[in-house]
Figure (spheres, rainbow, N blue to C red):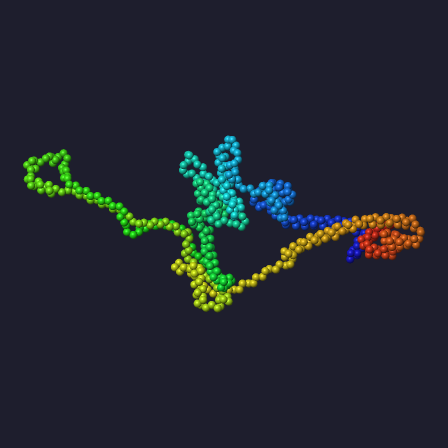
Length: 547
């Protein structure tokens, strides 16, 4: 088929095609090799540092260039990429040069020399920045925190303003690592760390926000007060549910298997906080203190109205009394007033209790356990064994009848799960096939470059001396034909026979068709590559003779 196509095409087109086919194929092969090499190299580049790490890119580029490490810059994020096999070398070089991620500046800001005439405002700002940097560095030591920034709003003291002074506040911005999160206890620890570092800063004045805009400190005040908040309440309910399910599963799994039972737990929890103070008096009171007072008065009381005649002395005759009567009056003289006073103080034994009730109280627990009726182990059980199992599950779940807890145990046939068949990818989509196809494509491309690029060049370079000899011989033959055209066909036959046997020169142009065909057959067997050159030489000779 190739010979027919070649016979139909003109000779000049064949020559032009042969002239540009080899360079075009070589250029195409080189381009494909470069594209494959670049595509292969792009797959083995990795990031030198994280996308959010605060690193001087100019310093890193300078070090990588000095060490001769190839790198690339991602257009979208600006991250530096190095080859995987040179990643450790690049990081070691950067560490040796002292280049690492920048941390927020702390108290080292205070070590800088101050300029003369710096104001108190500048000093206060520097102190504030150093304190913010120290707090940020402390928060970044947490495992889940990638980067932190702290902003302090310090209330300034003034001698002229004594009331309505705003409280100090603080804001903490966190960038968490991928897939990590902080629980309430960790957020409360951050709030306590910040509030404890600044005098007068209350924990409720500290706000913590993550990179997604979530206010992490929303429930911190309740957590610090012993509460749980909304998120903490959900976590506590989930903890009770999981713990109860785990206790029941630990009993049923060895007996029935993990696929032959299902457990559902619904706890009802009261998260109201209660603080109670009690004072009680014990036993009978006892005498703690006693005082007695008694007063007796024996003198006559002065009677009369001041300044009146009632105070004048009576007559002697009236005052004169018999002696016996006076003696009896003196003997009968007794105290006119008596006063007794007693004071007693009793004390009771007291018991004062300040009770903080727990922030949650399990009010009721409802548990439902469903067993697979088709399980082989259950087919041998009777009602007595089911009752024993239910009692065992009651103890495992912590069922309290006084509290109103309930546990129901039921049996029902489970629907068999569908058989899982791992999806089988077609052979052309398997990773191993793609990997081998990649290696095979690279090998095939290299083979094509060798066959259609390198070997034809080597053959052409090897044919150039023979082509020069053939051209010289054909030129001499043409001159001999023109000079001695009348010498007869016998001499031409001898020359043609000699040229045919030697195989080094072409037969004369005047040789017969049979001689030329025989020469071409011999040449096609021994030197296939020279057939096209011989035909080209004869065609060009005919064109010259025609002219």
